[in-house]
Image (tube, rainbow over all chains, first blue to last red; front, side, top):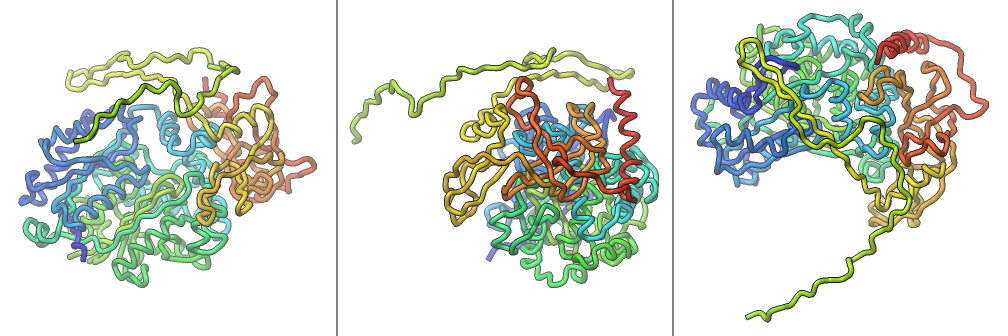
Length: 416
Length: 222
């Protein structure tokens, strides 16, 4: 019988882009640890018995093995450490690795530091760096960057599911407006405005149907999270810990065009799925997580989520992959505002990638931390108001997503 | 106690190295490998914050190895695919071993594909990576070449961006031989001969409205 996995706290730096004067990554990691200690005074760095570092691209960081700098800086020399890299799902994969370490009984208290510094190069060069996680032999130089691949997938998905540009624009406005209640969110700190569906519709074309306000933000940011055994959680933070009751990790093809007739998916879900439109790895990893956590009906059993809205269109696709709606009712599900703060299953109350930001290695951890804050009742102290607090939540979902849906993880977190 | 073993220096390697006889250099002007160099810095007025500029420019060798026939095919104006002799599936982009687990990584055979394709899905890009900005707007399609089991991404030329359609028939058009470099940019898609766009509709008008400012913006790029 594997052991229960708990989360006792965590924090992020503000997410930002461009010069602010506090760009030091190891310094940012130290500040995240200190904020966690303010929230959980009993937690000491001496309690850690493993450090996992979550970082996507050394292209941005211009430093190989940069985790070694952070590790030294935190005074953790001697403690085992390694880095997890899995594209946009780096944060989720690091959490998966930490949870496995605790479950196995080999480690008790695992720290995760995640970060990305995407403002070391120009925006368009940054897009190109990220696109180097596509198959560069076939896709990089044919005009291809991720928003274009996602747009091609979403365009077909939206038509097949009768989801309109306006429908996904409501998701973009929702998340960016949620971020206006979150002082660490990049949208709050930089753009700092409430937007309407019309603003999204009128924003510049990125790749049809995706426009400027439909896409997430390139960011600089650091996050820290403590994953541990229940024994340790009860010792240091008995009233404010959550349990990781379910988790799943799955994969799909690197090139989106390769999943039309994939033998592996045909074996699992029958012919014609996932086509080029569905996030099969999301469905598959959610099914694993639901089974483990005993989730029968996700809409009823899950109270809210922090999910990987790299694009407004992908958030809509994720709703379907998570089983919140199907082809017959996904458009209505969005139009009924089920995932807004006044809906029955709010998604991305923290702002998501569209609002909080997307410093790749820190992103999945940010989602986990926001989910944790909601579940333990810390939103009033972390957000600017209670507008983005989910009322009395017991169960949240965290979703982390890479490539063109190439690696996706899902976690079910419950209030203790 | 173990007996000492003398390891003789091997004269031959385990496999023959290819002899490269055809070499081409199409390096754009100004691209050079300078390695790592600190090339400047800036300091804030109050002297509390410093940014330093590191330049890193490195030549990579992409060894296409067993995939080489596809890229050499491009130089010859051909689309080479692979086919599994066991299950009969074929692919462009190619796989050198079949991924159907029942075929147990069977080595595939090379087949020349027809220069025809069909749009599986599409998008019209108004933004891209640094090296593609001047070519905007770009119609990017994922298209199925011949009887391939998968779709390949490439640009679609020869029509207004708002006229692209799902399922439209395509032909593969190669650059003139002397301009080819053995990369997927050697070819693009064009509508098949005889294809005519459907009349304007609401969605086409919408795409046109989104795309028009992109043409203007590209003109401002240096």
